[in-house]
Length: 97
Image (cartoon, rainbow, N blue to C red; front, side, top):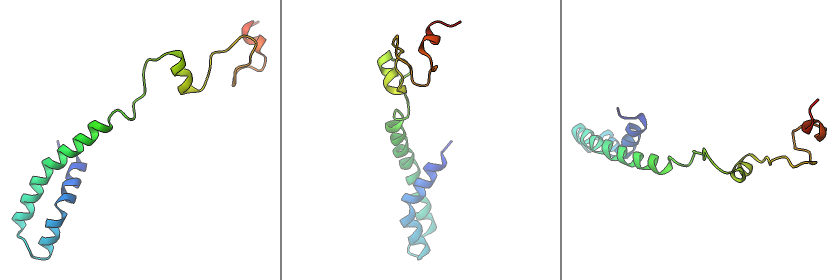
């Protein structure tokens, strides 16, 4: 199935022919032929764009603790130091009652 973005881009590419049809310079068959030629070209161009930009929104699924620390901003708790957002008393976290 053809995506609506492909048809819109093909219509944009064949817009000069549509304008020339509106001013009675070309026949409707010329406009339709130019639009039909523009559809596969638009599909190829947008597929290439989707291929190039496909990896930009993905994040790494597996990584080291250093990678996770860099992405989340939280570090492993060291003994004797409070963890931001953790319990107010660090001893209560180490020795639960």
